[in-house]
Image (cartoon, rainbow, N blue to C red; front, side):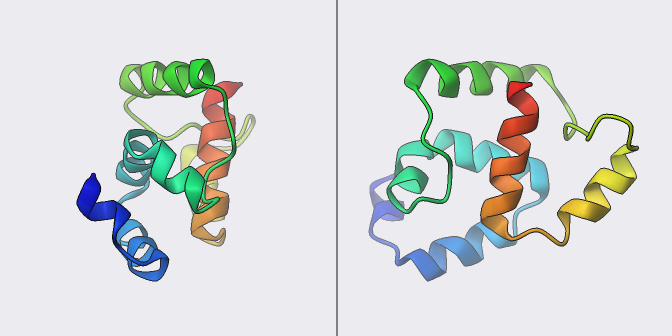
Length: 95
């Protein structure tokens, strides 16, 4: 992780942008303190981050918006910024 901390924000964003959606969520959870320092993830308590990590391990697909299919949810997410996508997925895992 020390190597990631030395990367400029623009490069870090480009790396995350190329990750598939679930990999981006995994990256965000694994490197939460780093992304929090750049304000790319919401400020959460340690307990909430741990709960997200446990829930992410138990789920093999993206969470969906209630009442919408996973395809429609994914299509909608494509138009969100990277930060908004991460925030959206974290919020959906917390519901």
